[in-house]
Length: 117
Image (cartoon, rainbow, N blue to C red):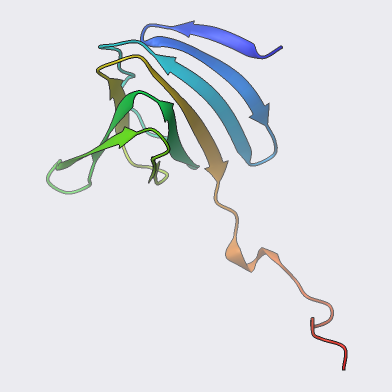
């Protein structure tokens, strides 16, 4: 059974959490929206299963707002440190996937890969 929590905008089910990734299934009621917020270290991907989700992103410098309307099977990503908010005009089911960017220099190769002759 998933850990389900009621929210002012609908409900969320915590599906998975690992060292650097989390997956939540969200159900947003018509007219529901989350707070304008940001994550210090987490990137945030929204993937819509059904309905329609508007994702607002506040760009730095000038306070410009980008709005992306997501429909079934569409997604968008919000980078860490960027203020954002989602809203739904109709019943919407989506997935929120959070991850922490790891250092791209994380891999240390002891031997090279290749192909056998």
